[in-house]
Image: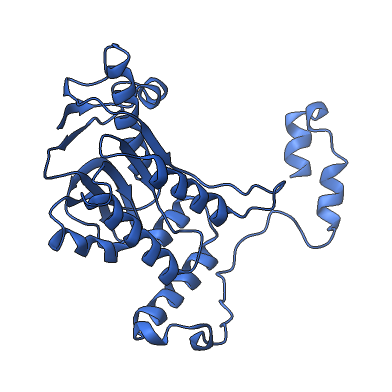
Length: 279
């Protein structure tokens, strides 16, 4: 079993400072081999998963571990599928690289391995990606095929239904506090599946223009009101022009006589009286 009390990611904690870092406990017994983790991007899913891998490595080399208390088994290997990148030189796409890594993991992992799988299937269409993610999850969870311990992060919330039909799968999510259109990441992992990815809110946090955020919300409402089978390219309506609120521009469209005169003034040489007269 894995029993880590208030575990931390040592590198992230070093950067953030101990006062800012929020520790998380991790517990996995024989019946809980897989944690299915949902929640928005930037909320801390990857940090939580990497934290476990680092603690396992530190423990197995005989080091102290960043946790209040930890009980760990011996793993024969740690396999990770985190992040994505194109291999342009060999002509492999992001999805091809992802699938090659997944294939390599499933070929070599044993029931004594630890698997860290982050958003399997995200590089292709929704239905294809979700089907691949579920098939991989079932393969890893089933003791007849693999039965390894794994942390499996996904944005496919439909997969949370597997907890009801597979004893070894348990749902976890990163707690989020929502206040209107604003969200706050609490960085705390809790039991249960997330019911929202907060993708548009995260885009707003990242600085995407308000015009695009507003239009994305309109499109989301249209898609959510349709039956799933009708959500196709043909169902997308003609885009509407979004009228952006008028904003004061600090860059004039054309030169103005007043601006030309101001540019000729050296304010450092003016007396207080001359400043008042010029103003």
